[in-house]
Length: 243
Image 1 (cartoon, rainbow, N blue to C red):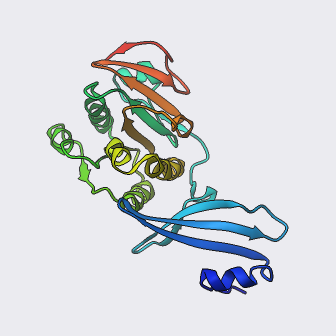
Image 2: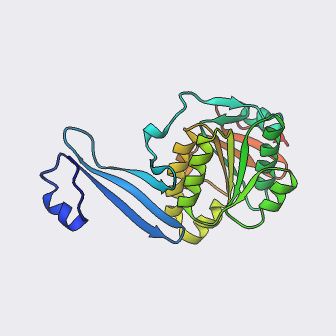
Image 3: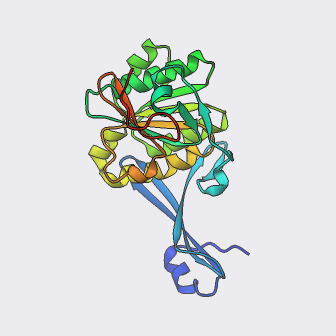
């Protein structure tokens, strides 16, 4: 039996229920944040949260371990410098391309996307800041301009994963972090890692990984035509590779 109630009522009778889940809806400037807080499980583990979104045509999408559809990481060779540096891209893992402003991060991810396309791979470039689309389009990379709305971003990424995309590249999360703080980036990276586990290689560009290093399975540092694998299952970690 399932019972629903507003928080004020539910708190008064929660001791009767075997399981208690609180649905949180927090509207932020960068979009709605929805979470399931597992507050009580009779005879089981409680005290954790699970993010979710509501998407037209899909209903409620819960980003927990049941969302994962892949059982193993797949290495995807790109045919250019990324292979020598990191061994390629890794489907099923969350990647970060790191470097200061002007280092060439956007140039690097767009050319990585192009290299994958030339090998018949299915890719998408998503820009959450101004200016990136023109470069992606000039290289013939399928691009999508998206407003700073995390719920829309997560729904879009979920659909791309379900459609079998090999890699998704995201630019602009630094701007969101600068405008709305570390909490905003923390919440989206938490879900991006689960989306990567659904199948695609998810690649985001960031200026630095301060406070967020633990989210990334693969870290690539870029600086004006030189790449270096800081963390990667394969490749030459710590070696500068011209690109």
